[in-house]
View (cartoon, rainbow, N blue to C red):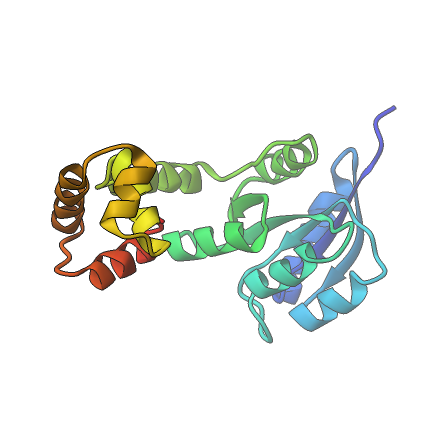
Amino acid sequence: MASTLQIFVVEDDPLLREHVVELLSEAEGLEVIGQAGSGVEALAQLATSKPDIVLMDLGLPDMTGHEVTRQLTRREGCPLVMAHTVFDDRDNVLEAIKAGASGYVLKGSTPAELVGALKELKAGGAPMSPRIARALLLELREAPAPTPDPLSPRERQLLKLVDEGLTYKQISDRLHVSTHTVHSHIKNIYEALHAKSRAEALATARGRGLI
């Protein structure tokens, strides 16, 4: 026999909270073991209550659901968190996911969709309302391509030696190349990094994580 999925509901609207609690309590395989109408109340109760999933409203009166999620997911043995909200914009979605939410379901989803999402989350999935999933796909498609590395592996190796304070002669000896080759590489590095001096080239390379 499958174990009962224990849910904690965080929702500031008392009428909506009552409706959600009733809906989930009537669903097969689910049990609501707690509820809260604010972030502070939720964090206090969840210090001792150990649900499988916290259904998290993001628009709370005292603190955002993102912050409540962030604090919860830092705790040892924290429950799974699924955002349950009217917010369907990019910033709220990404912030909730970064805070630790493992699912994102919009209010207005059907009871079957909500219950199904909770069970999917517990089973290891990452349920999202179709509109949210579509928005994230568009976000990924429109994201700019990563900037290609402006330096070759050899140029990065040489620049690291410059950063260590070696002279061109010492670098040529270390790499078994002529000083002319070292000078040629340095010129290419300056051009690639749009630098006019050794200090500027090193600063730019550090800033871009090249050395």
